[in-house]
Length: 331
Image (cartoon, rainbow, N blue to C red):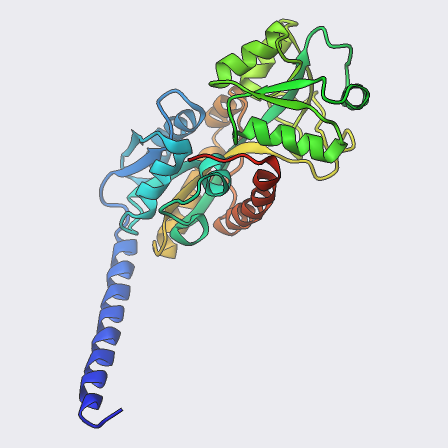
């Protein structure tokens, strides 16, 4: 370094310090005044879906607690990754909140060759709002009535049991692959074009098995058109307390569900993240909201940012292996 360049370097260094300080002061002031305009929740699916229901059910009460209105914007496509990228690239001011599904955050990054956002680096977990288990359901005529009987039947008939899903890489597909891996069963994956056709296939007997979202499965079980053997979450579902978990049936560690959680852009002030978490958790404790969630098969959670961050990181690693083992890919 020559003497002539030293003043320029000092000048650049000094400017960077002032810019960083100004940015920090700006973020601090922004956090103190938050919120002072409507907050927009970005839903990565069309109106009427699970994430949309979760967001809209929360929005009025959460808006009252925050003192500002909540606006819901649906931005569907590409397994929720379009919405995730949109929020990841937004200003870190807490006015754009992603109501993400687990699919876009911990599964899609391993299905697509490349994405323009990084789940871990570009988005900050606020709180896990809820989770919806799958139900291991079989055709009503299949001669099994428990998980133990089903595993024995599957092993006695390798390659003869087919399970339907809404497509490659869907949660129901990965649930089936995890089941095969955990039990040594050799069920054959049959992807359909959507959840509706996949559900109809197991009811009609075109396939024998499916891992079905609980809200869709329970009415068919009640009508005797399906048999429900277990839920896929680590704990029993509040919507079906009589159904055992697969872990209870001997599949230790088996846990897969569709979870919903709030995220904001990286570098959003901690004070804003904490406020969003606290008021969301507060809203989730309201009896009316809890009842509506449970009726739709969603178990309300309201975890802390630290707890949710740990879950996201753990699931990101878990599904990297599950997706690789399944061979599923999306373009």
